[in-house]
Amino acid sequence: MALKILIVDDASFIRDLVKKQLRDHISGVEVFEATDGIRAIVVLKHNPIDIILSDWEMPMMTGEELLKHVRALPEGAKTPFVMISSRGDRDHVIKAAQAGVSDYLTKPFTAEELLGKVNKQLKIIGKLPSYQTRQANTQGISGSSVDVLTGGNRPKPAASPSASAALLMGGAPVAKSAKPPTTGKTAKAKAQLRFADNLTFSCVVREMSLQVMSCVMQRGENLPRVFDPTVVDIDMGEEQGLARVNGYVHSIMAGESRPESNIVKIVIRFVDNDVDKFEVLSKFIDQMQ
Image (cartoon, rainbow, N blue to C red; front, side, top):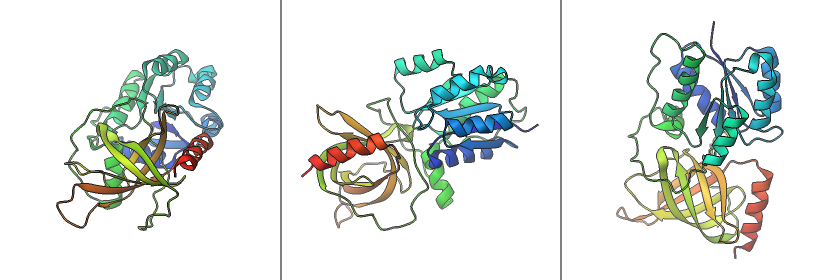
């Protein structure tokens, strides 16, 4: 009998990447998906699900509300429920554990981390396949997305320390246009770009709108690639703190017309559908002159 895994996330990009990893490394797995908790409940009514992988921050119904519904079901009391969240702080994890999650995964995460959590839960419920699953792509979710699009591999970037555990990762189907979209007002702000494998870059924001951000940063040994998912932490000042937005690399190019240039221009396209985030960004952009 095929393993049945349900992915619940309002970001289609995340669902697609998780589906690919599960199907590539767990033979015969049957993957279901839902964009929110309400749709997940419909799936659960018609399908015996072995494991649930659910985002924690979702519209319509949160991951915590979905978890409570699952645990109230006779067949859901022991169903592994893995929380996927951008918040990795201790208090949040403890609260989720008290709510009844089986395990948690902090965004952004690698393919290896994802498969490790899934196999751990399969072992607990006695459904871990007896065969050895193919080794996960240790480049991580962002690296895997590039391989899907380009058919290539790249070396794993050296890890650098992350300044915050509160990371997000989300997205939508990647844009096919090679031309950067029109940006908004000129913004003078600092931001950090966070990628899988704890790869972090500091940059200076040049232009920003509700759809896109253009910035410059120092050239280093490791650079992100086009289509890599990222979390953008925008410094809005001491009073407003940080604005965290999900996005992906739309374009990257040399900042100067010489090969030895140490400046890199990068354009990030935002993929969030969160109204509250849009409101915060809109006010911030209006303040930028």
